[in-house]
Image (cartoon, rainbow, N blue to C red; front, side, top):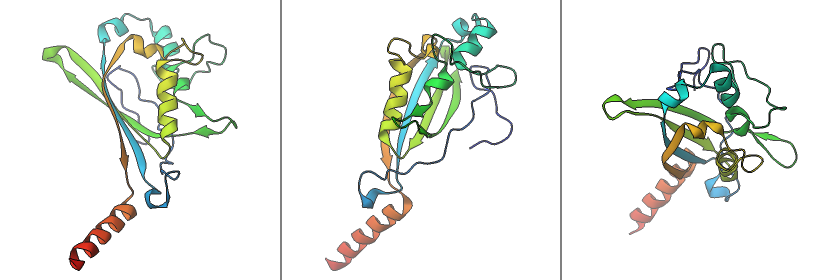
Length: 180
């Protein structure tokens, strides 16, 4: 993950800080401990429409200042920012992080500008909750306003076992092959 200087995304906006590094799937049995759920999504963006939005409104939508990437407090705002909707808090008030990043891409000849998002989490419910907050809203109806300028085109979720689990599976398969 990036440290220090944060490069601009395709939105011409500094990319947000990485949120967390806890990503083990520890609730699905001992053999799969330390694995990760991996979600990958492709979004296309209407940058022409986004560029017509005044900077203060863009900052409200994103939840950070555009120039210096300072997080804005949106507690009193009628709709939460993208930054806040991406934060997951459980019933006990504990904040849960996922490891995430995005990669901008463009195909100017096709007028296609977008972002590939990838997120890793040990708990599938966290990814589902984050997507629910973005698409449905919190409260319902107050979805992430970035979606007014972005359209999801693909999305998939995988489970990636940990290296020790993969090594255990290889050893078991080798042992089985040697016995035949």
